[in-house]
Image (cartoon, rainbow, N blue to C red; front, side):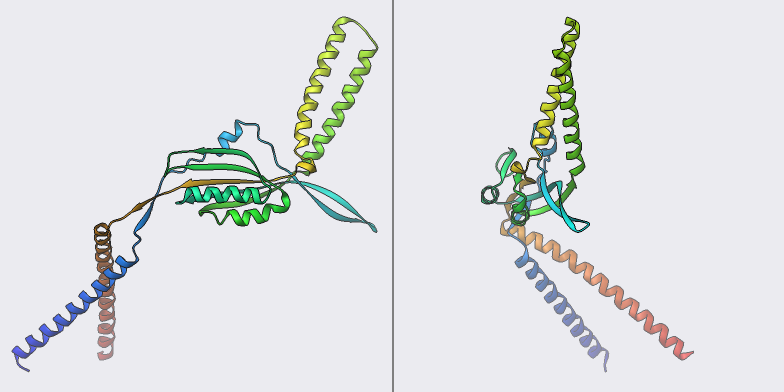
Length: 285
């Protein structure tokens, strides 16, 4: 083969290689351009104010009762367990109005009660925080529906036993009632004015404590049993990308990806060449 033929062959190989690389680049570019989204979601900060706002308000605590059958000897005995069950759900939405309507519909469908609501922000950057009281028998069903709203960022369910707390409140109430009865009996016996006033003040203090206990115990009443769902919905603004921006973005991504791919291939080829060369030298020796 003459030197001229070798040059021609080399040019042909370089031309075919360049053509192949160009075709690969074009295919990768077209793939990126067709798969790149025309709409992008703009990240906006999430303002979690629910806990701080709730702490400043008197919001009813939600408790529920579950009856367990315990075998004591031959006769089974029903034992009531008082518990608190809370679901925390955080979601983002690009169709805020639609998702809010769906959320409120689920609350109504499952006989829920909105106990706390905070809504703020302008269009595109709104947030909605709800604390919902849900009948215990509907808790699991409404939870499965709510986690379908928007794009869920976080979710969890917490269950705490409150039986001992309930028993302590009842015992404290009984103790205060006994003290109040004793003080009322002492007041009926008469005495000095100073002692009478002290008894009246003490009885008044006990009455106030009993009222507070009555509110706390009222949360445990089976007639008002609820589980809690805390739902946070945050709006994300959608921006539309025009064709020229998409082309530039796709080209830059393709160039970066292609260079990385070629670098990896060259490293593999070089490493393979070194291995083959080493094996050949060992064989010759």
